[in-house]
Length: 583
Ligand code: ADP
Ligand code: MG
View 1 (cartoon, rainbow, N blue to C red):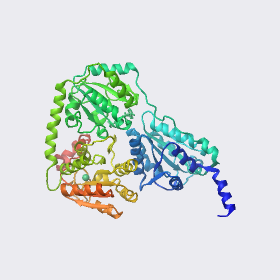
View 2 (cartoon, rainbow, N blue to C red; view 1 turned 30 degrees about the vertical axis):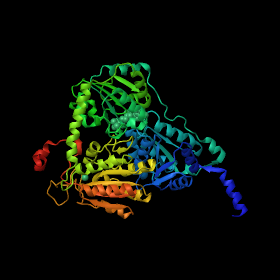
View 3 (cartoon, rainbow, N blue to C red; view 1 turned 45 degrees about the vertical axis):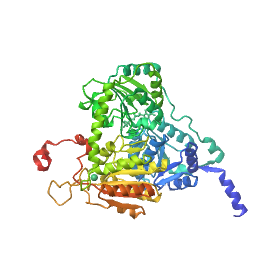
View 4 (cartoon, rainbow, N blue to C red; view 1 turned 60 degrees about the vertical axis):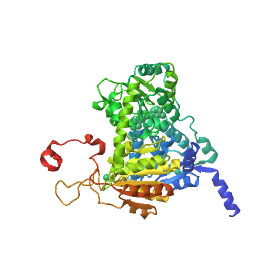
């Protein structure tokens, strides 16, 4: 290099720009990974972030980058960052942003956007769209940057909005021109903000605690329902202490499984119907009373008015959302649980033995019944036989993170596969969204370094299957098992009009999804028996190589809509028109 060139370079280094300020602002706040899809105007931003030591994981579609970012948020309590291009890329990421907000997971969608003055006059810019306005309904907060000197504050606000109170999605709009703005490097550094105590802990007042203790003292048939808000909080030891000190049976919601192991003697999962119906006092621990719990009403919950609820939640507005909450405790799970534990001393809180015996004997009986089904050797293989194998795999390798989506594949795996460690199960969440699988698997692997087993219905996999290329490209230790039953819910659907087209719920029979993984250099396997499945999955987890095990499942084994067929609207007319509807 000539001396003149070296001097030139020195001089340049004293200047910073929007690209680098944004990267520095994220890094200053310990955000070290970006889930990305490159393109105008953020292609170089991704490159520079990688050059500056960030992990930049580039996906094939923004929705999956977004799902990955949201799952990263759930796993780490830091906002997961997704970066997208303007208009169409932004909109592809929006589904994931909304999903993050719905699940109460912190995420920041950073999207490039076209030039404001052209967009605002609707003059037809490249990928023109008022993205800020579009994003607002789908997130907790939306911000737009105009000047590079505001990047520090904007990133700080985005982080705080994402993680404080009830976590959720945040949108940060980056007009392309802003990235190129320059600033004196020293001034730029000064403009950055390190967010102190981004999600302050908060403890309920003593009278609120006393109220809850009063309800607990009167409980004859108590229950604790643990939700993914508790898993998110990472106060694992405190939650365990509360459960064990109270002696209450507990029911984990799907993503709270493993916060205490499903094999814990107080786990009431196998007696779910009984405890929901018969309990008289229920402590909701970071779990919403929503559709997943029949809104706390109806025959699943027993006699109307027969229950009193204590609810621990970070969000005061969650209280009374569906039923009256007798004792609201507003604060983070860890602080609330700690306050309850401390207040329980000498209050004589212990569940009656006959309640525990009842729950226990029901759970034992149900588990015994299930165990027999899990060992069947039916040909073709059914869900139970296949899941019996995967249950054993996870029991032997409890450090594996389980990702799960589908209809029957989801509903059956949720109840059959035990989870042994906190935040080791990621699934479709509050919306029941299909297509989270590959994004979740990639984020789980990137954020934890652990092996991932993604158990996917063939339909669910279809929404995100192209991301197997991403898994192969980053050489991630992800084993995808596709439960291939040739269709949605079932693989034996008919065209009710009798025409030549396939049924609306059918796929190509015996589709070789395993070849997709092979196409990108991963390992593929096609299995038709429980033994073959066991061998293929164990090999995959041992090798750590990207693997897709295509497991043939009886096309006639599934139920319409899995366990939630009751949510389908009914047509009276159909009963007259189609003989098939009368089955
Ligand atoms: P699940 O689907 O597992 O039942 P939900 O997503 O319905 O769980 O409920 C999670 C709840 O946890 C939300 O109401 C949310 O406000 C709350 N929450 C999130 N983070 C925390 C936290 N750190 N402490 C307490 N509550 C939290
Ligand atoms: Mg299927």
